[in-house]
Image (cartoon, rainbow, N blue to C red; front, top):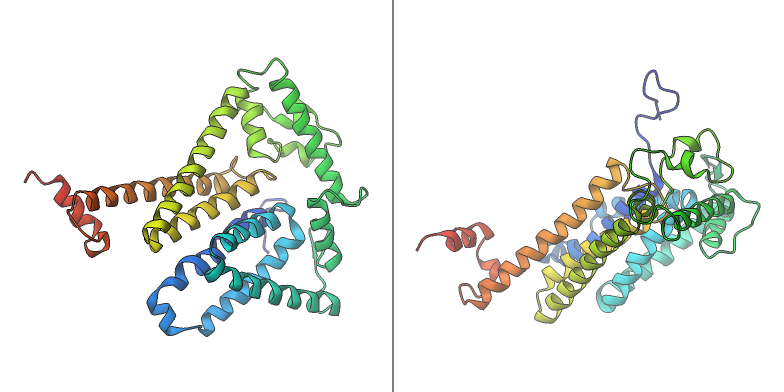
Length: 321
């Protein structure tokens, strides 16, 4: 891609594979959970445009599989969760797409139809296998994947030592410093010195805010996870399939983002930070709308929330009469 004028290597359009994997997971789950539920879509069936979109999704996912391990988990885990919760409606679709995608990927890689080097990593079955083995902790110690994993684990252990068991328990080191220069993890290159955070959002919170900050961070995310799960179960039991699907989709979107931030610098920048907090804000909004709907039904003001618009119900609720 063309670079920004007067810059060294800043591309005008840059694909960050970890961030892309979050959107890829959300897009696939939106199609599986929400978009296919529409009665109009069911009558229309499968279109050529949807086939092009699915092919594009598989193509983008292949590059994610080569570039990042966190991206693999961000895609697989939410889809596995949805497949378990919706065995009859979604699981077989995920299985079909997984088998078809694996078969096509194997054909392309083994036939050497595509030979691309992406930031030093070859687009090959061996590279994808190394990524998967590295996730499971069985990677080759001589590979770059294992070196980056060990580099992070040493840094994270150092952060725990000077916060949980050290002098920065209550306050952390603050937000102004460069943690790479302060903590001094091993084998730091000149390019690494520009990385201010330890490739883990939770560890960033611990290093910069101390244990109290980590407790607040964990409490916020655990409460959000519990509320979304409870809302999904209530909606599913009451037969509100639309809200059950929305709650599940938001929950999976959050899970994909949280997996990515656990292995990459994600929420520390605007690209991931704005999205992550927007997901939480959208989830809270969905919870409030569902709570409002439940009050309307409980008071007998409307039998079915969807027979009136939210605006009409709000006007009725706030009117003096």
